[in-house]
Length: 565
Image 1: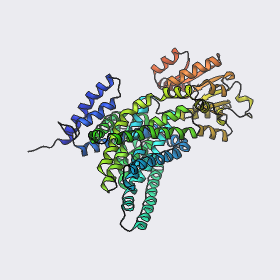
Image 2: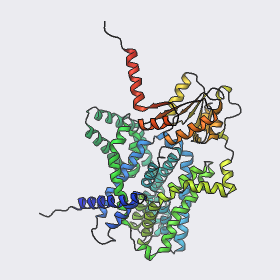
Image 3: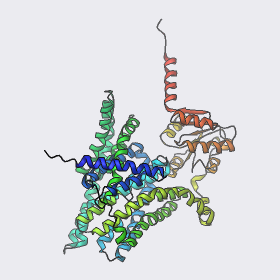
Image 4: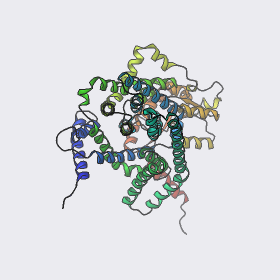
């Protein structure tokens, strides 16, 4: 009896070689994902030796994309995305437009048809969410404001790409032409309207039904006490909703899983769900990078080196410059502009899908698809290095160019309290850094006790909304002493830090103590190690999640306990 072990052999060779090359890459202080990409090239059809099954690898990598996007959704709420909508939506649309035009210009220069040049430019405009999340997680900035803006930006790009995928067949007929241009244009508009309706219906279903059903389901499974059953429930929900989104609503697997994670975040068991699914997300994300390597055709570097350099230049430099300018136009600081631009300096999964569909409908040739794959592989490998240049480039720009210093010093209306601010917010007040979930709960408790407070927040939209409600708030990064000064830290009674980064907490603590040596600092830590680190910095009032919860529960029981007489 003959057995076919294609799936097992592909996974075995893929994981095995990825492990070896990833380990070597880390020892050489190169990101492990470079090793994963090289592993894909080694087991791909373009190199001698074992050849993995590309179809199986692509499907396994699709699982990786789903699980990774599901994890992103677990960390981001709808409120987080809506909080950055004023920059993410127009910024992503404008950046995709400029990048598409740039790609089209070179496509026309190389003698390609209008349709091929358009799809080529569009494929270069959409960055990889998988690569972005890995980069942000590695640097510990996924949950920061810069991270939220970057993720929100890419979610908008993903939505736009979903529309492009659905519109590809009628678009091909319109460009290729068969004497029925008006009919194809009408078909294009109908497809656009149909797609928007499907996407809206899926999101509405998830927000109305999913927000109730999924947390309830998780709770019922958790009550059984079975860990493996809980893990199975989490994975089944993630993949099941992603599959249903694609089959029933024509929404991509990735976006379906993303919304599944956002809905599951409403459950009190979301942190456990994130922890239980983490090993699966990591394992399958490795297969994503391996599959990218398998698609790469190394001979394109020999046959078309100049075109390859142009493609990499558009992705790494062109998109980055466009994004930097757009973020600065929205009056965000240079660090945010450079972080977002580094996030977009690569392309990935949606570019591959766009290219594959374009070839299948006759809009694109194999040469242009190979160029896209080459640009993806090289830009993904370079992306960690691009992120490493963010701080040096910022310092260099500020040192060399007066216009950069002007941008940093430019007047920001939300960066200081209005002249009409009541005096109670200027002396003896609480300075609350961060207005996320924890910060909002603290603010509510302070309001209930009539304790005056000033919010320092990096999200300008949140600051604007707070001011519309008549609350005192300043915009900026509180690790900058100037922001604390605008929050009147000099005369404040207490500094409450509701952000998650221990590095930021230390910087804020040092700045606050310099400006107000007698101020009391209250922070939240996530574990005992963070608590010891912060206490070593002289911060004495620290709330550790599990420890403080246990203490509060014990105090409540002791106060309520009455011995039986």
